Length: 219
Image (cartoon, rainbow, N blue to C red; front, side, top):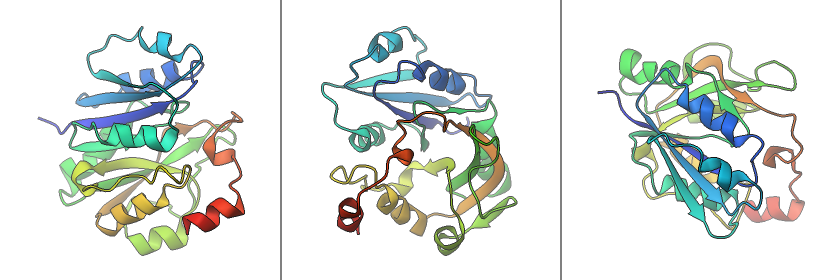
């Protein structure tokens, strides 16, 4: 049986986009997955919309109050059942072959690979959002941090997490956890835009300038 992939979708006040995101996962050609939706205390129609989904591969975890996206992601990480996981923003989507394309690497090409990265399609430009890689290849930690910029996406073997989680006191800064994971990962890059990265909205975390104080505290 193919390994299960856990797709974590943290959401807050995304009634206009969350259905699109969920449906993009339900349409995957790779059939062994679960969707963990962490509803982070929304005040719009998100909750009532989620109740319309009856697929038994979907689990919804509710926060009584808004705790922030970092806490929502940690809630999802703590409830993973799959051997692999990914985190998907609730205003983005993935193409139908996304999970299958990435899982093909450890299943058919290299069983030692435990982290897979792919590129994204930027809806604002129609181009690949990640820069620095131009072909399928193995990538190491030093190359990633020195040569790659922009938005990427991917799958991670769940056992790479160990007990590490995002720092909830530093919302918006997630690099520390990914650095720890990268240091112990055998990562492979697939040069395809498998995630559709919606940049037309004005409320994405990636578009909100971070203060010098927050950046200093992070370091």
